[in-house]
Amino acid sequence: MILLMASRAPSHDTWTIAQIAAEFGVTHRTVRHYEELGLISPERRGTARVYRRRDRTRLALILRGKRLGFPLEEIRTIIDLYDAPRGKTSQLEYAISQARIRRVELEARRRDLDDALAELAAFEASCRADLDSSGLRT
Image (tube, rainbow, N blue to C red; front, side, top):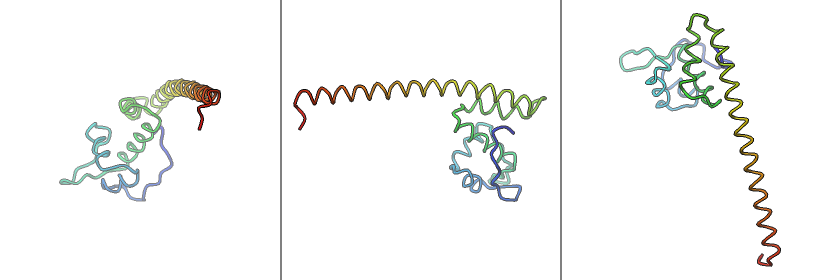
């Protein structure tokens, strides 16, 4: 699957909600939220949730997508494309197009931040100059 990092999972095939939450550094509530949205679907054994390798992989992808700034619906689309007829190929093509869009957005935000920082520096320098020339500095 796309976006997957190197596996740090223990060598077993199922995990509890506590184990999966601890491994990924998220709360139980976060894991349940992704379950409610249908992004992961653990097996139920009575009241216990049993997470399999697929759920663990999907959670890793969700969290990586979130770190990259993708909205959950885009993450869902990318993940679900793996199960589409063209599978990994369609998933990769879509992920590349979405990554390009996200990169352009982030680069624009960086330019806006750089402009704002430059404007703040100029404003601060202007204020310092006014203060120095007025003799009001204590």
